[in-house]
Image (tube, rainbow, N blue to C red):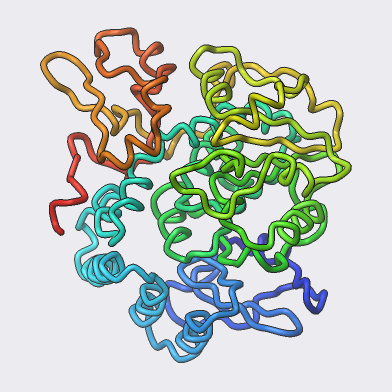
Length: 423
């Protein structure tokens, strides 16, 4: 957690700024541009910083972390406190063992994201995060990056609300830099994966509940994104009001992959109608996109058009939609394709075969990880062919998302461990 991030936070209950209050006098916890373990506080409450993540949720594990930070005698006990916040028992066990081994054997290679996520107990969730870069919901987020770029001045900040493991933030960091991204999520484990595997420690990570007021100051962000999460939030009005408060007057909000109440979805959640989502942003100009057309625009090169409105009947019939909301009329225009936008920050990535594909008999073969995944992400078949020639020009393979940028420690070449093997 960066010191400047702490200085930008403000408690919405008492109105005071949040500051660092206590720093353990333990080697490895010194502030060198990044706060790993500390206690921050406003005038009414305290917040533990655990593993570089600010915990702004008022729940028992946060109180346990505060106590552990005060009593810690060495970095090992602090790491134990961090591991305790990870509620997935097998993931917690593997991370705990790995941290202990690394203290004595620094040369040991770390476990990859691919292997570690295998220990998530819910096999559907494990599949979801492992193959996230192939999901149409994620591709919709990629398609909107040129429009997000239009909302960002140099150094403008992005909030990824309900960031999950940080897949979208990783992609955003390639173009805008991780230092300009705030990742917030309710689950500590999600932020742990995001900080240590996908986005990196240059981004800011805050564990909070989006159903409550956000510890963020007014007018902080030029762009706010939320992908595949709004339909799981109970208090959508408070959430939207908070986003409007922390958004700059000329900024934009992008809700990516919203479940549509008019159409049954395999993971419906607390879906709203398009009218319901738009009503959360009264006074804003709204643009909706059906997922099929938005993701299709990335593959066919047509880009994304915020200058015109899609036929509303098309929106109502789509099980998943995306929405842009802004008061800034200058953002309502047509944007080019993502592949016309050159990434500036590529030091944390490696080009690799899309995990959805296998090498077989001189071809790349598409293989779904499960029947449920194939059913939920049926649109994949519209965009990713069942078989593709690996000898196509590299630029073409990249534009088809057959070869994709992955974080360096996401997956090793040939690592395709089934999530069912250990069960």
